[in-house]
Amino acid sequence: MTIQQAMDKADRMKPNMMPAEDKIGFLSEIEGKIHEEIIMTHEHTAEEETRPEYDEDTDPTTEMLVPAPYDMIYVYWLMAQIDHLNQEMDKYNNDRSLFEDAWGNFADYWNRKKMPIQRNRQFWI
Image (cartoon, rainbow, N blue to C red; front, side, top):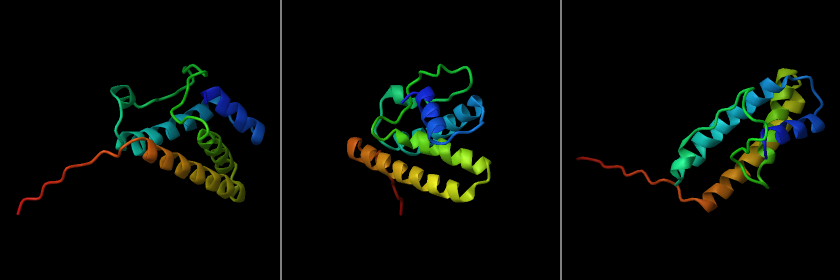
């Protein structure tokens, strides 16, 4: 899913007045979490070492990290952030629940696809 596709889908599912640069910032935030908490904790390529960061100058056709069919994680994240900023807490809780489920599904997929990094721990007695 591209940045623009995520924003467009979130806008269709939850009409809002949030500026695109704020949505891009939220997408950059969740990409950073995905990168640090999931991708970097598993075997990865040198190409995957670079943490993606987006701003208003980023090409909106940029592909994000999470592949289909797990990419709804971005849409649910945006929807939850919109509700949070609008102080619509019941809607926020619903969207956050959808996001958490999507996060878990992606994390499970990544755990099946990639071997977790084994940290060698040495204890000296």
